[in-house]
Length: 324
Ligand code: ADP
Ligand code: DP6
Ligand code: CO
Image (cartoon, helix red, strand yellow):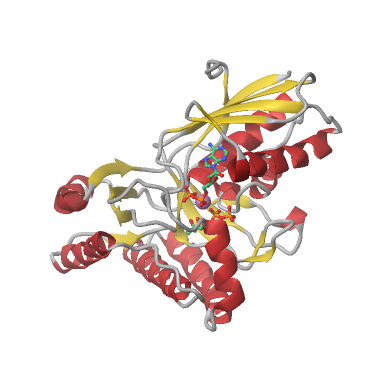
């Protein structure tokens, strides 16, 4: 097949990935854990075309150049070397979530691209191999290959750094979009800065391993309050260590903090509500299916709200995105 289309969804980390031990292989400094969502899909069509001299990449109908095109080409180079096929490709992609706003567009984007490109170049990869491939595009994409809840094992080399599914209670995230505009510092760059300059980085990495162990246990036990407490505290630790970089980076906006405060007040009123945020100002409030509507109503004043649950892993589609 020379053309293939895949769909993948973003994931929100409950135990966050922030820092690499090996940027060439995209090995993380610590493991992480997430929920793949049932909303905000990315759909990507890859067409291998022997007449092209360069790859082409359009996102949301806009032809990409510079860093975004470069990142796609470097990822396709990995696929080409696995396939032993040097032909260039035309990539068309569409994100339903805002791009580069801390709602994991790089996760859904590279999970969809990994599967579409693998199929278009004739690679037949199992879930683990696909997860490892997606990792080369964006660390968080490692987990978006997997449906529902996933742990990304940090590993020590390419073969041992992949995500796999775990059992966890059925939960919902109330996504509060306080600002959908692109972040001024990409996750890639800010992560590098934190690792290189924060005096607290080593403590962050070792405490993340600890948080992951506790999170996996809480999921197996079906202990929702424990899952929530670990989620919120780990998110705050990540934003704290990011803020201690030189120069400092801050992703949370005043309105993001208001949502964290709203979660505290909801808990005081006996409602399940724990806040988290990735590298951007948009906040997700973790709750149960039964309480999701009430939580959404309580935080609606802070931004556009959407209730999401665990969703599917990356999968192929029979229909292709139209030419622009
Ligand atoms: P986010 O919080 O959205 O994941 P990042 O800074 O991690 O933000 O990554 C954003 C970058 O990911 C974009 O600038 C682009 O290079 C890449 N990206 C986003 N969506 C796609 C996509 N659908 N296909 C390929 N690359 C994508
Ligand atoms: C805060 O996966 O976007 O969302 O690997 O450099 O592409 P790269 O970064 P990315 O970082 C995600 C950071 C996070 C936490 C998480 O998803 O675990
Ligand atoms: Co990202």
